[in-house]
Length: 292
Image (cartoon, rainbow, N blue to C red; front, side, top):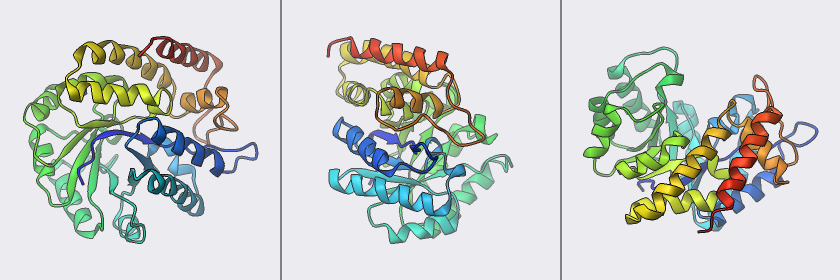
């Protein structure tokens, strides 16, 4: 299945003791799916997987998978190594794995292609490559992205290059068949959809989920009069939610809404400042104040 539409990469809420708040996670998952998301991502960067134990990671995936089964929604799971991918064979509800381009080493584009070819051979599920060069240090040109799309088992890319560059425009001007370009840069989702992206993996869509889902459908149906102003408002919200390291501000706003028990994040992250939280809440109020 080629992913398309709005996917929400789920946070991991924590309770007052610092433990994973599974009931809150379940409620959030059901809420965003009911509001129009077509799928969820478990153990994406937004979930703080670096700070979760192996047992916590399993329970988080279990909880999100249960919501996806109930809603018949897509489920992507962050998995970046062959053992992590092979473990997904025990999870029949997983529709694809989200796999990061190898970070820090900057192995070169040919090595990245070889890396994904090896992972695809080991994986029981299709792969969505996560291309975020300002974090990984590894650029991929449009030619490499097209070759990536041609690898067996690769069904899409989470595209988060820090903007819309010439390679992005060239890729979407002639998108590879059966390969989804999914926006992973929340503030740029509207222009990327206008260029032909298949959807987005958007942490911002924990909030105003129905509006982000409406934005995707408006661009896909060609309703520019609806899509353009909605995209402007949501870009302002996304910028506010990412004013400090993700997912701190998202968690702060969810806590202010009473949807998670605390705004806690785990080290090395710090909780959002009151200034960033207040600005994001004001932006959210501005989105909600505009009638559909």
